[in-house]
Image 1 (cartoon, rainbow over the protein chains, first blue to last red):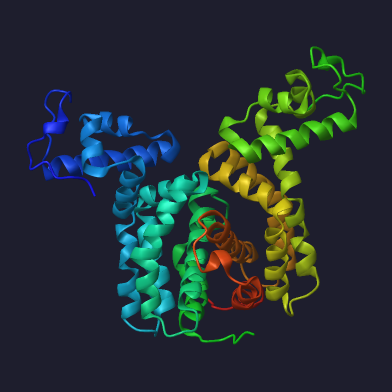
Image 2: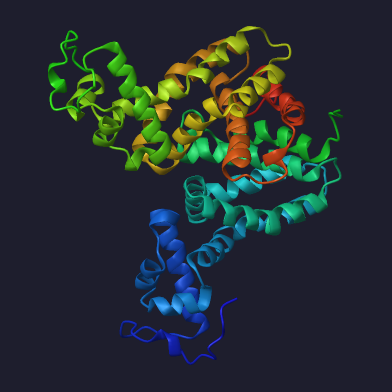
Length: 211
Length: 211
């Protein structure tokens, strides 16, 4: 991917005084700034330049570490979706009660604004920009869906994992984005109790047998 | 809301040659243009001016019929969501098989690009703009949720209707917006078979008894 510069920071010329370059800290700082920018402004309105400005470095350094906007968006998604990558471990604990465990796992991520905000921001970008949707699709497929499907002992495990995911994404949309009552302020224990059997069935019940 | 002008079209001055004004046809033409504009550009980028231009009328005439941008967006949603307003009739046919009927009803709306495109466009606007979300929320509540809830014989009928809606919205997001496989090209009969028991349970099964 991005070439290494051996920590010399040669490509960081022209950056504001006081900024560092060519170190892992710089890369992390750029990535944190990228996540902030994508969250606040969406994919369309974020540019390499705006990320560089927010990180206090030269644009060339952003290019150096991440390449094009598409790639830094991908890195930003990987960071924002980090909590969700724990799903395969939830499934690996076995089929009994997996619906409830999974519902609780998602709710815990969402009810914490620190993990919720960047995930919703990425959903927003994907809904409004095809490139952002393609990047999200690739990461969900590679980092989540393949691993989830390998844990399931049902026909069409990927399709079922996606239906379970669709249920949870739909709830997030209605609760946090459209904010429609009573779901927007429902007790999440009640939501978990209602949703758990849905996830349990998709992920563990081999029926219905279809054509 | 918008004042009546008795069909005189007095406020349509300055419009391009050949346009009509002050007639029900003009109102319909403006509304159709609004729906097109909101679909193609989203809530943020659509203006009264761009709607007027697309409809071939003066901006004042758009104001005259619909008031502010928020109101014409509301009218545009009412038009786009017209197919979904049939949900209460689907429920009124009785609890037996309602999950399957409802899943099929949604799938029929989505699989037709003519009804799908404007609904997805409104979802996009609501996801990216708080005013658009508030308008959508009000219409879903008033035109759909209240009527749906009155058809259901379960505890917390609104919450359950929303969980069913969340399942279907999530599927639409993953199939048509993020376009993740295998859901993006799945046989919808198979999806209906898998989803029907979920909707059936939310809408007719009084359990689980919580708290």
